[in-house]
Image 1 (cartoon, rainbow, N blue to C red):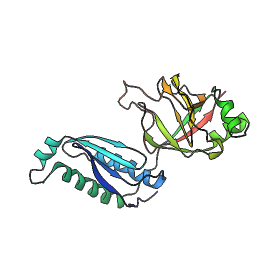
Image 2: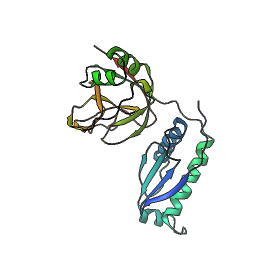
Image 3: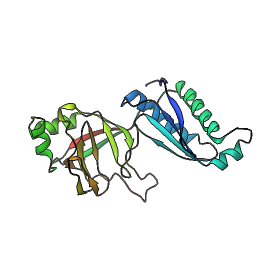
Image 4: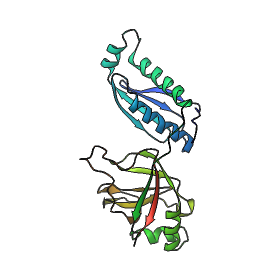
Amino acid sequence: MIRILTPPYKIFPLSDSSITIDFGAVIDVGINTIVAQLFDYSNSHPFIGFIEAVPAYASLTIFYNVLQVREANPSANTAYAVIENYLITSLKALTSTETKEPALIEIPVVYDGEDLAFVAEHNQLSIEEVIQIHTQATYRVFMMGFLPGFAYLGGMDERISTPRKSTPRTKVPSGSVGIAGKQTGIYPLESPGGWQLIGRTSLPLFDSNSSNPTLLKAGDLVRFIEVK
C-alpha cells in the first residue's frame, strides 16, 4: 500500500462556480495518485452544492452550485472560502489514509495499425519489437478527456515514443490504439485524431447506457495483450 504524502500546492478559482487545486506542471505518479484519491474522496464525501469533480494530471477542479453552498453555510464570507476549506480538510484526511490498490485492466489488441510500420521506422525498430515493447509495460491512467472514455496512459517506454501526425485524420475508428509522444491511448468512439495508430481492440471503452459508462478511470492500471 502507498501512503499519500502532500506536496506543495495552490488553490485558486477557475470560475465563479469552480475551484482548482494544482500540484504543479508535472507528470508524476505520486502526485497523480493524490489527485485520483481526492477525486474519489470528493465523490464519496460530497458537500451540499457539489456538482462534479474533474481530475487532470496534477490538478483537480470542483464545480459547485454557489447558491446551495451559501445557503448551507450562511456564516461563511463566500462559497469559494467554503470549498477551499473543504479541499484543505480533504487533503488532511487523505494523509492519514492508505490508498487502495488500483484496478488492473487488460486490453486485447490486434496490432495491425496503419502507422505501426512508421512507428517502427521512426524508432529504428522492427514491428515485432514495437509490439513487444508496447505489451511489456504497465500503464497508468493519468487522466480522462478529449472523448468520453478516452484515457491518457502514461508509462510508455521511450523507445517507441513517436510524435503525433502533422495532419490529423478526419476519422479514426472506435477501438483504435495509438501513440502520441510518450503516451498511448485508445479511441473509445469514432472521431478525428492525430495519434499514430498501431492496433485496435474490440473491447468497449464507453457505453452511455451503462451506470458505469467508462471502462477506465483515473488511477487505473492498463496492460495490452496481443491477440492474433
